[in-house]
Image (tube, rainbow, N blue to C red; front, side):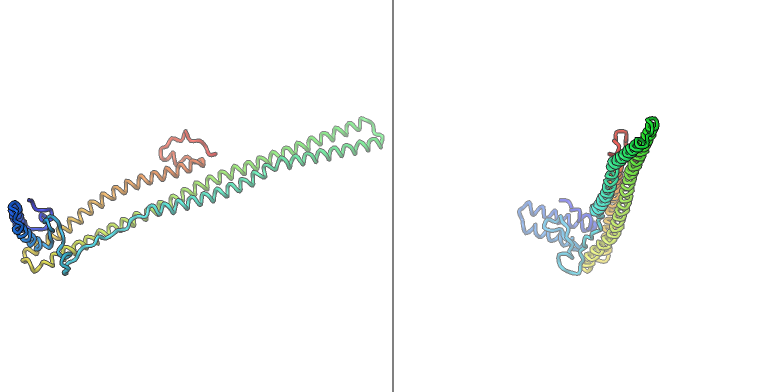
Length: 331
């Protein structure tokens, strides 16, 4: 039976040969059904591993620091946590803020639009009343003149000229009222159109500013997580080294100076290897995070562009290379 990965990692060449010999003894005892011989071979192999500061367990293939078994002066490393970016929480905050701001803008727009629409709807009735009053006053003036002409004995020619003048004056007054009504209607329609443009601009500005603030907050979260990961990695390396050093220090009196130095160097090598492995994993994780953030950024830019398109602004979609020819204008 070959040595375990832990034996290969933590035993020197002489210790490896001893463990291999004891394993061969265990195999012979096992084949003969000799339990006592199997136990003796296992104890002998475990004594070699103990000199290296660990136990192989019941089958010799595991790894348990002796400091964790005997309660001595050894030290068992803890797995240190690092800060995780609160992406979902940040997005939830900014989504809620955006919806609240858009709802507020929409409410103000609808209230102002309703006021202007009421004013526009009231214009025809108001001007119709003025036309009726103008016509009534003209008719009253004509009746009064006819009564005066009859009492004064004026001829029909004079009366006809006066009636023509009155009729012309009435038509002029009614035309003037018509022009005033049209001008007032157009003025209100212009106000309504301008109000809609202002609303669309306010929505686009609110969305853009909200997404900028969101991006800044997310960037801060990723930077905080990255800084935490680096700090945690350094602390974890120190923690692992203390555990290795403590485990080897515990077996200091059981080995020669040369063996101790070799074991200590092996501990340092393992700590360095652990740090290198972490750095490779961290670099790979950073690359994956970067790709994920790029995809997330594109999706959010597309979402914002589609929202702006609902209010007639297609610049965001066009900036992303989206064909906007099939998009309908704002309602």
